[in-house]
Length: 220
Length: 246
Figure 1 (cartoon, rainbow over the protein chains, first blue to last red):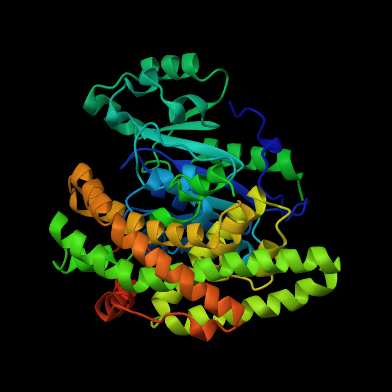
Figure 2 (figure 1 turned 180 degrees about the vertical axis):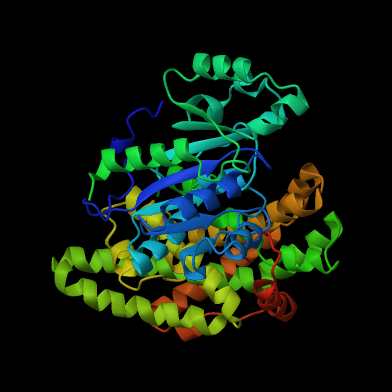
């Protein structure tokens, strides 16, 4: 449905290398969204100006995690309270998140804006009024049927991250089945397998972020 | 008058930032002060008569101010000059909301929701000058934006007042369902039972707004309050673990 992201009609920021590319990071509870955000910050903060908006169910929990791990200075992290409706805040009524993003842009003129959704379910996806591209994070411990079940996050996200591959033998998950199912339902959109715990550099995801950002704003 | 326009503004699916606010319910629930459908009914009844009356008065007044500035500009044909003047008029009404909102946390909640609704309204009714005048204020208070947006949508001052009360009660009721797992059917029944109260309050607010707008004096509007939820709003704002922004 949203294959051509450059044409989504949120208010455009000034074009050029300083434009803040907005990436939404969503997925079910416990899949590794916050760990991925922390990993992306750690990998990219020396190369790009990065800010983060969190939408955790308990508001400060994810922001605290990022602060504790000192991946970004406090003033580059904003927490949005979603009133028990994390999916509403990233899809149906994005106004609070738009305000948080704009405040961070005003303060930091960032090159990369990461918006992390609160943990929800397989149907929760971002509105392209809020973000330019979205990553959907699931984990193998949720069962190897998840890609086959599909849902908007698995099917239409711009990047599907299947995390915790180190647990696959322990939970009896067949990664080849997950890979084949993801490929079948995702119509050419990329899928990567990660173990953020064992390989916190997440090279495939970092490469994807760089490539998507460059495609939109050009390289510096 | 446009019924469709009024319904659009009454629809909780309209992006307005409202879903992130509990209207004071979360602070009460956290302290065990609101725990049942009966408690909710009493809370809504009190809030509609106090905060509801105030917010409805300002929504109705803003609706009338918006309509009158549009009419004045049509006569004079001088928008560019008058936009600045009108923004100054709006700032007087905005200040009057400010002084009637006794705690900082609720002033922030009102401005955040005003900015959210304004964002949506400016796209929905791009030709409505009063919305642009309000935007000059930065983050105007929510009832003023609701009033101006309702005028742009073709609503009367009375309908603007009814919308304000509806949103106040609906937001709190929905939050109670989400936080406590109350039976949503019984909560809807409570709202239906309170409809005559809401109508009376809306009528009172509309009458007050008419006088204040005629006199060009925001100070004539009501200033009722419910101290406990207002004090708790400040504590809620300061606490670490909350699901709603207010």
